[in-house]
Length: 440
Image 1 (cartoon, rainbow, N blue to C red):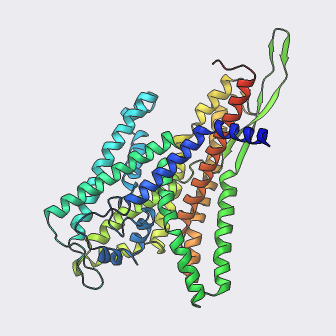
Image 2 (cartoon, one colour):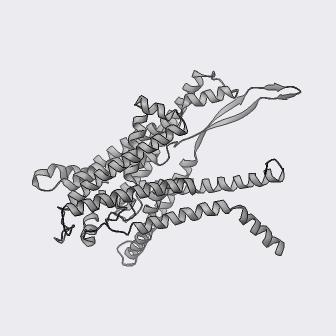
Image 3 (cartoon, one colour):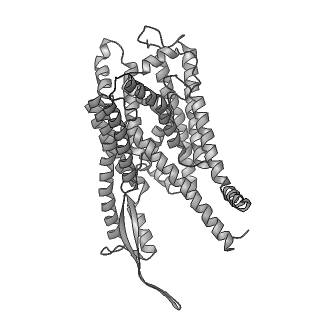
């Protein structure tokens, strides 16, 4: 018994680094949730909540920020300015020769790109917070109460400083989570913001079922829909096309290596959850700005445009689908280079059966990747829009929209995969130590 306990404690001791990383992520998420309750001074909380609730754009933005927008917290902007700045520099990095040169400089170029992205985040967050503060001064809640207690220069300055500082802190916190924790820190912050509203949504849905507003059959249908979409997302995220690769025979002294066959795995959705996040952020801010500033009869057409860009409307769905497909191809082209893959295969003495090495291999891999990306982009559009269509048709309080559910499932899968990778690395380290292959 004592020996078994000792073995268990020994195994736990080997996972000290993993435990520290997990605890760091948990602590960072706790800080994020606590910060979402620190309000910017000068705002009427009840009026702000009533202004946000019921607006499709504001509800989506509020969900991504974990309810911080409804409370007008210092984290109200969330990490959306950082994501928007990253979009701009990734697009410019494929067009401007100077930024293309930075991408080829390795770690030094990456640090410069990160610095430029941070500066752009500061400017974008300051601009957005200034616009929101100016617009809030003229807003009145449904009951006639003003949203801002004392409009003026003081409120604008406190809003700009508070919201910009909150965004920069979240950017820094996300980078620390990526470096010292597990998973992508920015994605985990978005994940935490979405999941934070889940308990209240579940209680509300169960309350509707208890009061007779929602039938038991409809409740089971919603539950089955969540399970079905989750299973479909997991299946598609793990799906891949395996291209057969043969390694030529090698001879070395008395040893001869026969032809070996392997495969080149290509994921169907190489871009992950990035396209929906990019599309949502690009759609959210222009439409939100129109919603803030479109007051009065003279801007009736702006109000109509805002309504058309709200989730659930045909124009929003069409623009969102086009942006998701475009970003899926764009981001895949950034993270996967067919020519580089072909060069690596050629240098390692590998070839695809029936395909000549070099340019022919690159063209073949690029064609396969293009078809896979097309299927992956359609899958992203389907997952993001079908739950919204069902929600509108059945009028069901389905808390997770398609984009939110996709983000949650993909982030959980990535987090689980990285935890498993840490466990496997610890096993290899123990094997190397036992074999005396690792120097002390």
